Image (cartoon, rainbow, N blue to C red; front, side):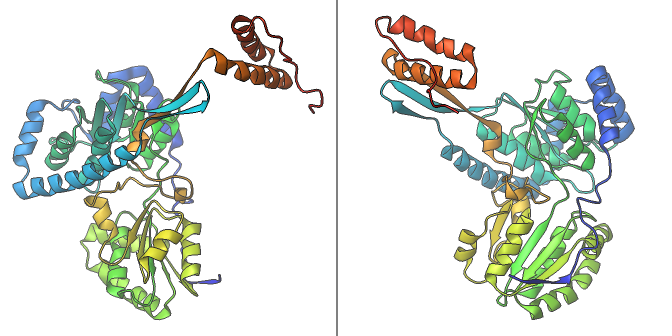
Length: 438
């Protein structure tokens, strides 16, 4: 289907990522060698933090006392929604077994990782919701030990609301650490922590690069770039809602792409007319981010029909995909590549960002083509097992010996041969590869 760009991005989030690998590798290397002392040094340098690294129970209690009751109620509301959704996900992932052949039984087990490290951003904005999304989900998966860290503010530590949320959601240990040093402390098991088996949570480009480098030593949720969002809208959509939904996501950062895909030229024109004024109505920091994102990274794409819009969405694989169009069930069945899908004008991406239930840690930069977002499944290992009777092992051993010899793996073949000799000493077997094998 043909498409027309009414607004084309001048820059892309991927091409504009700064090269931070060298500096991140240096920090990770020094922390691997220097341990706790190196982390403290970087905490002083980057976080301007001289206080305790492990947050004490007294500090947690004090933080809770500082959080207004209305905010506590909101945090508990979000936590309950996210917990219920995560527990429902966990219930879909079960152990199973099957008798493949008479006497041959195989199965799978779902085993939580032993330790998780959750990173909670705390730079421009206080990401209370990220604490809830990561820690709650690990808890619902059954992870025995959950560490969490967030950047402390000089002289204050982690903001009280974030600290309250981290504790409420079940963090076993909380660290006054941000950036690469926080990620490295959890990955290396510093300050008395168990080594994290997986690191999760959003962060800036330094945090994302640290996770990328550490991947293999530990698991990670995903490689994350700048957040992105797409709205699909037809002639039934409300241009004011569409415009605000784009602006609301653009405020994440100067390089956060937002895309409007529509089959209605009049709606596209109206949205493009509305957006600058809406951005100017935001507080200055938010407006600065949104203005740059809209000017340099936003796109408005005109398509002929619903099928064309769906094709564009699958091509871009946006992190957030919001459909404001007729026949929502058709869109739910048709769309194939996204991090999280929002259907209808009654919902919005901000609901998912903060409190509605499904996780907001999602694949960016087109990764929705091959992976979903953070879920209980990220904290679970699906492992398999098998058991065979002697009678079942007979045919298995014969086939294994022949295939192994065809592949040139004689040692493998002999592990099958010896079982045939032990369990069936009176039988003769043809254990050579097929005569006509290529």
